Length: 407
Ligand SMILES: Cc1cc2nc3c(=O)[nH]c(=O)nc-3n(C[C@H](O)[C@H](O)[C@H](O)COP(=O)(O)OP(=O)(O)OC[C@H]3O[C@@H](n4cnc5c(N)ncnc54)[C@H](O)[C@@H]3O)c2cc1C
Image (cartoon, rainbow, N blue to C red; front, side, top):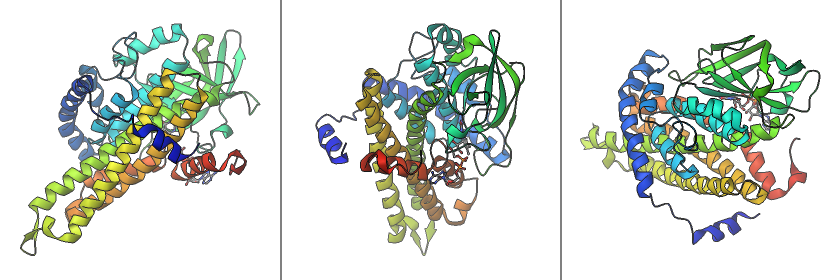
């Protein structure tokens, strides 16, 4: 599959016009984002969790945007509409957007795709209404880029499963009511399975991770399972299909990261342009200094490139979702999403760095959003596939699987 081939094939049909329906969704998202901004500002400076994200987005009926209307407050948005919404949310900060990635992209969408009807009926309405928050627990203290090496185990006893192990760096981890958790059968390193774990399950506990580089307003948790009892009906998807479930979840998760990063880059551009028109040095607005203009020009180009890759990936994801058995469409979407996430994560970090530069010393203060974006968006080059893992994934797609750097 050649990149040129994909580009040529899509050129005639790519249409990023925002439809009337999308405009309505975006105006609701915009309203909610305007409400969250002053609260997020305050929480960030006080270095504390923003507990208003949930009620504000709940009131706006945005906690199940891409989930089917069959379930509670699901709005049935396609991937592009959802990406546009997350782009807007991303402007408020990576912490706010990460909440959605954990709850909706990794949590709800995975449950919707792999759950049986009884599980979906039991949990999706509550999660779309914000009565239950979701998280996705794959990473462990000793298993990150290589999730196949995870150690959490499950054992079948009677009609229940018992899980033992731990998970690290889980978005929404210490606030979630329902977590998708991956484990191997006890004593084995194959046959990974996925489970839906409720917060009040016997043998489960969680705590928030402190001293993070960024994301002070968003929860990242450590999870512990000590003979954690999980009823049989909470096994998600076919037993032994855990890795496939995890990788499919990462497609939605990566797209959400890419969209959020586009929003971050947009906010950095807006802030840099505004500040350049206000700040005066050498008797001129700094926007009149050509070297400052260069920073603005570079942010804008990176932003638009990231945006196009992300929208293209979102459209590919919708095509794949509409024809789930088509492996070619899935592979195409997977590759485009990897490109978009990789590019947008780096573009947003670069945009934040340039915006900080335009702000000078004021850019070095968390009072201003460029500084927050700089530390917060850094994680986007780490979670849901590090830069290195995605570079290898993209290269191997072109070189052929015999060039896999690892198995
Ligand atoms: C704030 C935050 C939120 C997160 N949220 C979630 C979540 O909700 N759910 C979840 O399951 N996880 C989550 N994660 C975990 C995240 O997905 C992992 O951190 C990520 O997959 C990388 O794993 P690691 O940190 O263990 O790094 P490692 O895998 O130990 O990698 C360390 C370094 O080695 C490089 N490396 C590793 N293997 C290779 C290779 N084969 N070739 C080249 N380089 C390699 C990496 O690129 C990296 O630079 C979160 C992490 C953070 C920081």
